[in-house]
Structures are given as structure tokens and as C-alpha cells.
Image 1 (cartoon, one colour):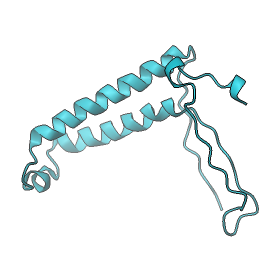
Image 2 (cartoon, helix red, strand yellow; image 1 turned 45 degrees about the vertical axis):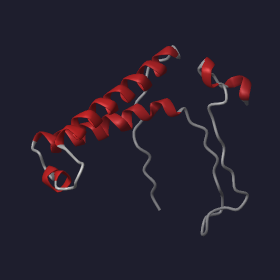
Image 3 (cartoon, helix red, strand yellow; image 1 turned 90 degrees about the vertical axis):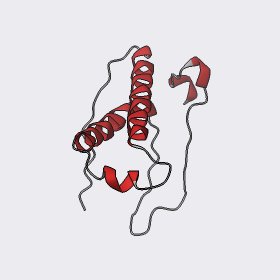
Length: 110
């Protein structure tokens, strides 16, 4: 399996597996999934977008700024950090030479 996986040179061992030989309760099978986790930048972008909608209106901000040591500028700093993480993951994904594919969320129907 490893020869078919392409990771950045500084993190050749950039994957983990978790496999349990017993299927979940009430299910006939278990499943093992290997995923490229650089695609997490889409999730971070969605979090940023939801945060920005609330922060623009200063929604719930007063709850946090009442806590000693917490200031409104902490949110701006955190947003900047999140933007940096998104940019970093996006650039890593682009170095793989493949376009980023946004997959629809998996819907599990019982």
C-alpha cells in the first residue's frame, strides 16, 4: 500500500490506521478508510465562514469578553491563525499536482 501513497517529503509517515476486528454493535461489517487529510481546509473554510457571519454582528461576543483575560482582539488573532492554516493546507494540496476536489458530504441512510 505504501508505494501508492504520495506524501510531502517532510512527512512520509503521514498516515495512521485504526482497525478493530469486531464490527460495531448492530452492524454486520466494519470499515477501514485511508484519507488525504489536507482536504480538511474545506472544513476549516466552512468554520471560518460561519464564524465571520457571527463575528460581523458581534453575536455572543459579550459572553466571552466578560471572562477575565479574554478580549475581542483574541477573536481577530484566532481568525488570522485560522486563515494561515487554511492557506497552508491549500498550498500543500496544490503541491501534489492535482486539483482540489470538493466531495459532497456522505449521507448515511438507515
